[in-house]
Image (cartoon, rainbow, N blue to C red; front, side):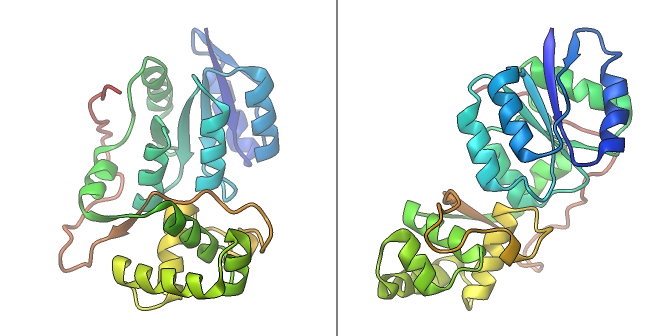
Length: 249
């Protein structure tokens, strides 16, 4: 029996999917969660085998990192209307096993969950192809922390206080990052960070913590879309669905 936990902040949509999944043999639904706090609690006490997680504004790189550490055997599938190439790449790096579009027919929704539970991956070909049309910039641990804090809207003094380094050191790191990533200023670097860290559905000021709080986990790399003149055009989530072949870990 596969114990499935659904997280969504859209009750009507969640009810519709629940009614479908309850009819599937060997599927057992745990109580649906409508908040991240409830999701964390259910994971701790409900012991789900698979989590189908709606990509709400609250589901950031930081939240996915926490979930990764909270779960050892549970598999995660993101349930999305759309997702950026950048965040999708980061999610895969954190161990997310599938990215499922909400608009797919119900039989494919069920098939995705069955495949993932059987140990396979579920990523549409258009999404994986988009990774080939992107540029990856490796970051040190400190650089990743700095990009995360910058993306939350913190100023140099606040970043320095949070990381317990001098403001001058922050300026040196930023200068190096501008050259490394190929951006002109902190605003452009913050935008790239946001694409990798969040869904981009909320203003910067509403996402992060201020100085003194625990910083969001640092990125190990930034995924950047290549300039238009060099990138091949990629269709976003075309139909029919073409999941990639299973990969062994």
